[in-house]
Image 1: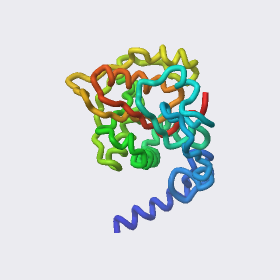
Image 2: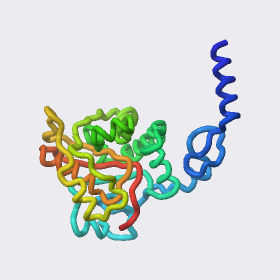
Image 3: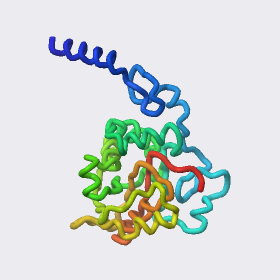
Image 4: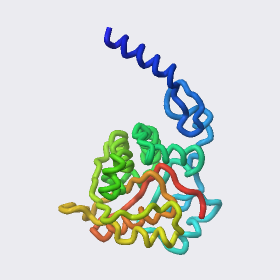
Amino acid sequence: MLKAVRTNLKLLLRFIIPPLCIACEQEIDDGLLCGDCYDIIRIVSPPLCQACGRPISDGEVCRACAKARPDFDRLRAWAVFAPPVDKVIHAFKYGNKQSLAQLLGRSMGRVLQGDTILATAECVVPVPLYKGRQRDRGYNQALLLCRVLSQETAKPVLDCLVRTRNTPTQTKLTDADRRDNVAGAFRLGNDVNVTDKSLLLIDDVMTTGATLNECATVLRQAGARSVYALVSAIASGR
């Protein structure tokens, strides 16, 4: 009886407030994205920069990595940071749409399982938020992704990095300013040992890679054997 009441209430609520696609706000029957938006997601595919994983037209590495290789050994991404994925990630980070961790995390899990190098990582490591920002938001989106990835791949979550200061948002900064903004902004947590470990950094999106690179530097200096990275989305060429 109670189950039937709940079902009827759910149907009534859907009638009054029908679900909308997060990206285009078109009415949908179920889920978070409409079929049209799913169809235009740009899945990352070769050729890719062998260092940062960014789609490139030719060659081994992109122009940025040719000038300065990142501190992480390899990075891969699920999709290009373009419509509709940009709106999905914005809703995930700032709209309290924590359920999107399942969509993004499972998609990242397929990338991880299909990459023989990333698959050697022992643990998944979330890029941390500053404690005040995480308190205001209520969650760290990178940690949510790690938990889904752990369920998908059985790799344990190692929440070992600490953000030491509340850095301004990177959105409107130049590449150089982004690097300066996060320089020295992370440290290894107390009583954490990553010596000789192979680690996989996890974040929602990579634009210039400054944040991931800074995190990788900290892990390398702490003795990590290898540091890889995996993100939901990556900005296209710079």
